[in-house]
Each structure stands twice: as structure tokens, then as C-alpha cells.
Picture 1 (cartoon, rainbow over the protein chains, first blue to last red):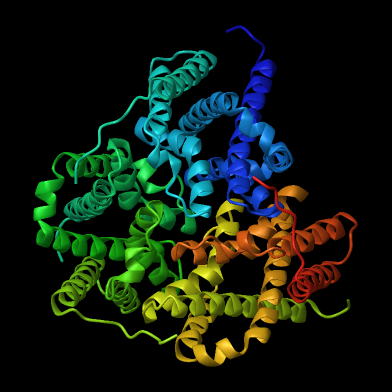
Picture 2 (tube, rainbow over the protein chains, first blue to last red; picture 1 turned 135 degrees about the horizontal axis):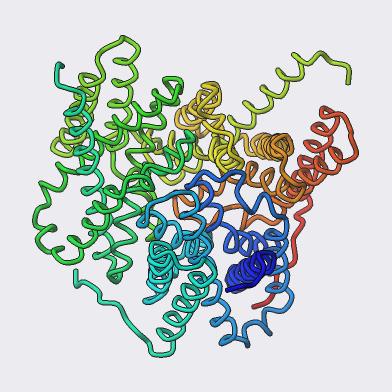
Length: 209
Length: 209
Length: 209
């Protein structure tokens, strides 16, 4: 916990760019499967990678949105689109690593979204909501753009992993834990729940209509 | 019109929470019908209950959005989701009361959205637009999330009721009527038009393509 | 380049209102084809005409959004909806002029969105993104509201024309060209690429999934 602040910021930046790239990849791959052209691939990769953060910033009032301030975010999204377009067969074969990276992205965005919301003075419930929106918002916009019911509504333990990670961040903040520890634990929790749920095929109860 | 200000604020708050809960119920019930899991039910109830207000606040620039400032709004939305999940059969049987409550929610949000827009200095046309967006925005997001054409585009006299209520608020404001009277009249007008249209099966003309 | 500033502002306003009206027409015509009622026609014309600018303003933080500040924008959108409702047969027959006007609207919004983003201090990549979002955002919302995959993802050279126009604006701004010249060139480029692509049936490469 005694790393210099500069390293922490660098770590956070790299995690964020990794999350952006991986989410962008998910958008690009969906676009290729739906046989969109190169431009459509880039639209879906950009939407998947950046819409969650953009919704977060518009809702809390941090404008211009982060994606408009740091060109590296946009660059990571574009790069993901190009990779999906040029190397979709190879990426498709990396099914398992992509799932793991996606779980990492989910954790990164849930944690960073919640921490940013707390910095902006939001109450715990609102901070959790923003954390989850940051983590799943990009995927929702991605799926809606090709008129699919968002994956977050179809997959069982996806947003729930983000909710629990966001909740841990809020709890740690309330208890005065150091921000880095909070971030690491929230990220690890989200990642572990998401990966375990895929491996174990965990289900959430459903009402019978 | 001589009630103390505190009672008025309390009344407005309770109306707002009622509208939030009822709209949340509409989202939760749709999610149960679409066989989403518990989490999906809560996502749809929260979206239906809060998206209209969130769009309003992002468009006029009142950030963080109200839903992020008052935890009771989020709580009402979550409660609606749980009720829909646990007691959907009972709620389904309450078809008529739910329609009445939904018409009440429509009126509450149309009025409160328009009044908030006027407070923020918007012109009459823009204030009406914001009032209608507040009233129907949640339902639009709810329906889009399960890739249905929004009910507001399918049902004949739904948004029209909100438009007329919003218009009355703008008119009353222009004529300098007291805010409470305006709110009561706008709410009553929206509610009456919506309920009458359902009862009488009113239709709006359609162009033949 | 020596026109008085007042004429320039007037020209920009008229171009903007023309773009708004034409995009509104595209929304209204789609609504008629989908057999929506009069209100649905107006919703779709308003969404198509104003959502791109509203997204731009919420993302960069210029609130209340322009559509809420200048009633003429809303009026142009409403007028387009009424024209689509009352004269859809005639408009349908004007297929070619409508395509040309739509290409004009695309150019106007791409240029004005990019220039506004630059005025708000955004970096070149972000300004291009905002320009493109302004130009295509209304169409995306329009299509999603009737659960169609957005035309911008289906048509080959649509957003690409907007991207190149936005890119030219950013380049010209960087090189210190006068704003009017930049606007004229960006508009002409977007218009020319869009019209040429329709005439020549240009395609963008697609990955084979």
C-alpha cells in the first residue's frame, strides 16, 4: 500500500485501458458475427468500450465525459475494433482468455465507476448504481444497436458480480480502507464471482409468469 | 392553497415516490413476463422507474441526477422490482388498479418534469418536451431493453395525456397561477385523459402508408 | 470570407434548421411506414431531428441542450412530423430530393457538431467523435425506437462521410483556416461522399465471420 501515487495512477490507467480494449473487442466481435462492415465493427467496438463511462459521466455531471478528454480511451476502442475486424478467427479461438479478460474489464469498470461516484459525493446506493452502469452500460448499448436483448439481462451472474464488487467498494470506503486495497478487493471479487459463475453454471432464480 | 410549504414538499415527495414505485412495477412485471431472472426484474423496474427523471436531469443539466441524490427514489424502484418478482400473480390480477396507478404516475411525472424545467428557465415548448420525456422516458427505456417497440408508440392516448398535462402546467405558469393549483390541475387532466382513453378506447388518426 | 458575422450566424442557423427538418422528415416517414399514429409520427420526427444534438450537448456539458434553448429547433422537428403525416405520399415520391437533403443534413450536423466540440476545447479525436454522433445520433435513436438495426450500421457509406467531413473540420481548425471556409469544405465533402456513394453503390469491406 506504499506505492508512490504516480504508479497507482499508472496502474489504474492501464487497467482502465485494458477494460476498454476488452469491452471494445466484445463489440467488434459481435459486429463481425452480425456481418456488419468495417465501420459498423468500429461503431460497435467504440460503443461497447465507452458508453458505460459516458453514461456515468453524464449522470454524475463530469463533463466533457472522460472518453472526450483522454484520447487513449478512444484509441483503445478503435484498436479493439480493428483487431476484431482483422483477426476475428484468432480472437474467436481465444474464447476462454476473452471471457477472463471480459471478467477483468467488468471488475475494473465496476470499481472505477463506484470510486468516481463516491469522489463526486454520491450516496452509497447511488455509487453502486453508477458502478454497475459503468460496468454494464457499454454492453447494453452494444447489444441494443443490433437489436438484441442485452446480454446482462440474459446471462445469469454478470451484473450481479459487478453489484457485489461495487458494494465492497462502498463498504471499504465507509470503513476507511485505503483506496488501492478497496480497488484490488472489489476487482478481485467481481472477477472471481463472474469466472466462478461461468465455470460452475450458477443460475439466478426466475419467477414463473 | 394555504398549506404550509413543508406539507407541499411532503406531498410532492410522496406523489413522486408513488409514481416511481408504479412505473417500477410496470418494468418488473414486463421482466417477469419475459422470464428474466431476479436481477433482470430489478434492472427493468429500476430503468422504468428512474430513466425518465435521469434523462430530464441530464438534458437540463441538473447533475448528479435526482435519482443519485435521493436514495428513496432508488429504494422505491427496487421495492417495486421485488414486489413484481415475488407477487406477480397478485399484481397481474390487479390489472385495473395498476392501470389507474400508472395513469397517476404519468400525471405526476409530466407535471413535476414540466415544473422543474420551468424552474430551470426553459421556454414553454422545451418545458413541455421535458415533462413528456420525464413521463414516458422510463417506459421507453424499459421496452427497448427487451427489444419491444415502446408502448408509448403503440398505445393511442398515452403520451398525448402527458402532453396536455404538461401544456396546462406551462399555461398556468404563464398566467401566474399558484404552483400547487397548477400541479393539481395538470395531474388531474393527465390522469383523466389517460383513464378515459382506456375506458372509451379512444384512437388517434393514423396515416395510410 | 468577408461576410458580416450576422449573416454567417443566420446562414448557420438556416442550415441547422434545414438539417433538423430533413432529419425530422426521415423520422416521420419511417413512423408512417410502420403505421404509427399521429403522435408516434411526431415522436419519431422529433427524435430523429434532435437526439443527435442532445447527445452532443449532454456529452460535452452544454446544458440545457440547444434543442431546449431555441424553440425553432423543436418547431422544425414538429413541422417535419406534420408534413410526413399529411403528405407522406408526396414526400415518398420525392425520393431523390430527400436523399440529397438528408446528405445535406448529415454534412451540416457533422460540421456544426465538430466545430462546437472544438469550441468546448475537446481534442481532435473527441471532436470528430462528437461530430459523427451529432450527425448520426438522431437516426440511431429513430431506428432503435422501432427496433430496427440503425441505418448507419446497415448502409455502407453513411457515417464514413460524416467522419471524413468531421476530420476535415479538425484539420482545417489545426491549420488555422477561417471557420466559414472550414464549414463550407466539411459540408461539401460530407455531402459529396454521401451522394457519390449512393450513386456509385460504394461498399465498405466486411469480415467473413
